[in-house]
Length: 397
Image (cartoon, rainbow, N blue to C red; front, side, top):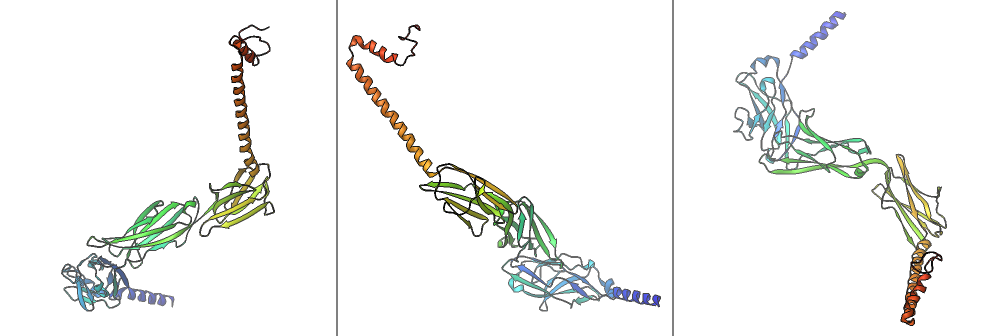
């Protein structure tokens, strides 16, 4: 019984392998840019009894609405010029059609003709060619670009390449790192150009739009339209306090602003002498999240600043990836307002004293007699001398 089942199964498999049929394999549809070419990936199979008829006399014919528009035996004389790129002996009917126009839209049927009994228009499926003025759309993956600062990030851009002699040129904006292009094949054997952009994620990339653009050139050398696709980078990073954070002093209060960036959005806290500061009659605190960015801003207002320095005022920013702090060395408004006037008063007092001294010195010189002048000078000079000396130049007592 088991032997009979095995023989039956083997017979069915052999029958399936030997009983081939006329069948063509090609894409269901291809989108072509007007003025460019299209390479049709095509392969076929025939009944096993016609294998001997597949020889060098065979030619590939493409029909549209029962009209021959391409014949591989006269490739430059048909309605559409082109060339057979495959080998019919290997059952490869791939064909390139040049300078496609909008009026070439429609269904295309493949026919195999040989100078013997093998002549067949393959009935199982047609190819629909759609000629358009707009280039085919891009595929940009991943659709949401997420990464952590310091890690390597990959972004892949794929553009259809229906005309292999004029493939699209891919470009990234902005140019963030190294990109590599390859020609790849889809399951239906159509071709695509793929560019992989690799870069190291940074907080500077967060929120930036990264675009891939494909530029298609026509066969006559003119530049066709371009098509783009973009994605917004979502980069997670630890908080950073910006240099714009500072303090402003005015009469009666001190305003300090702390600006921090981070993703996830950081939380900001103020500390004075190591203790957290909350809103009170002396401190007013506000926190604002800037929409569309990773920027958080907190402002603390010291309503009644004390005379002592607030040198231990600290802004602390934290999220799940880390933290950052900045110390604000500030003084009270009263202290800063009094010090400049005090310095000015001391300077003014010194200038007045010098003027009075010079006036007295001049008056003294006018009132002394000529023969007393030296003694007057000696008398004035002796006030500046050490008690150990009587007259300039004399030895000690």
